[in-house]
Image (cartoon, rainbow, N blue to C red; front, side):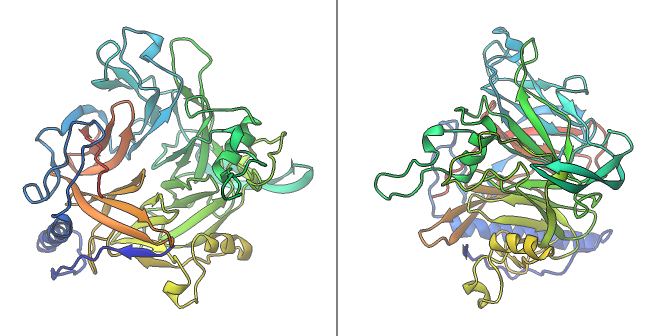
Length: 499
């Protein structure tokens, strides 16, 4: 897909920032401020609509160029210090719950729970605390043990065994574990649902085209054709671990008792030599479930992909396999597909436009989008991913996205980078959280529209979105060094109203 970028010009100095250089640090902060102010000028004449709570209006970009301001309504502190440490975000997992602990005297769950990627404990499901049948006002962390929390294996090498996959005997690499106490890093979620009425041979009565989608094909394959919604379908949390690699954790509704919602199974590790022990700390799943991406903020700019991480459900225009099973992660192929430029990858997000966006230590890149944009010399994304598997090596080439980078030549480190709906959110070190709308036109081109979303937040380490709270959550570390228990959770309205 091509990208039509909203141009942002600035004449600020773009010199690289060195650590322990106060003058250069000040220069970098001024540079970020100038660039993000430019976002306001681009958009200052646009009118915003009501936010998801149907009450809040996004701040006027002239009166409040930084967007929402921490310390001023409606931005509030949801959780104060004393609970979390260097939290890398959260995901909201839909489930069959109504009230916490199945007790009407407890707060309403909104049909799901938040799973938080805390680095002081591990990834856990939060228990809602608050008024009876009302909106939660806080969280309680469960006992740090299965099934409401999970750890990842510590891998020390690998070995190869013979394993029957389908009807064929294959040589499969497995990891050698030396404990299961690894803490998950940045994770991503998918919940494949099933609408049997869309399955082949159903077609659109006007166009004659199949109604089915790859994700519905996957969801119906997993459920064997039984209709499932997000609350009842299994969810899959794709995790990253510095001392393991990429894993998938099944989240399924608990059978009963006072524990409600989905609970975690054991992690299934993708043991391909390509991704094993690569210090991967970001995992991102494509929205159709076809590709699992991984990268590291500690081990270089390489980007990896695993093909069909929940198995290959087949062509959506064909019937599902009635005997389908999600395969062992050990049988899944993974390869390096390219790199994000610079020296490391600080975050990745898969956009609603079907593009993978990568935040390195200086800017944001994406893989080559169309042959026309590259003089027909490069393979476009996602075809380059399949080409990487065919050649067993990288076939994708990254290019800088100037809008997501906050301007031409601007260099700024990313603290958090996530996708939500048609939007991307990027928390800048020493700067704001910036919001970007992705809009795809009839030609397949993406227009990226930016604005500042929030300022004056404590050092943001992660971002999440909670359906229970109907809020965006910014995890911030006032200490700036990951001091234990200092993290705060800031609650902001969800305003995805850019025209």
